[in-house]
Image 1 (tube, rainbow, N blue to C red):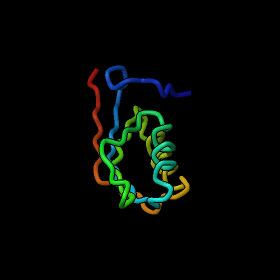
Image 2: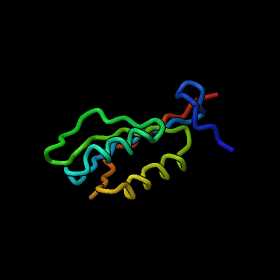
Image 3: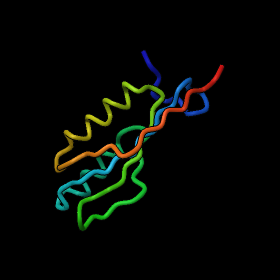
Image 4: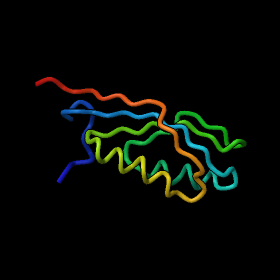
Length: 93
């Protein structure tokens, strides 16, 4: 069982991804709410008029992160999800 409450300082590995998300402008508020409900997810900038946002997701476990990224596609109103950045920080013992 993995602990999703780990911080970058306490995790062995830490993954960060940047996504560009295109959504239906009429459902933009609901999309933002659903995204922010995902642990370790931030929306640093967005354009509600065009339905676009930059999303940053983080996790200590690449499988959790992949599941979180895949779940974005299922949010009502999301049209497209593009991965534009990935970084993995491996902590040395």
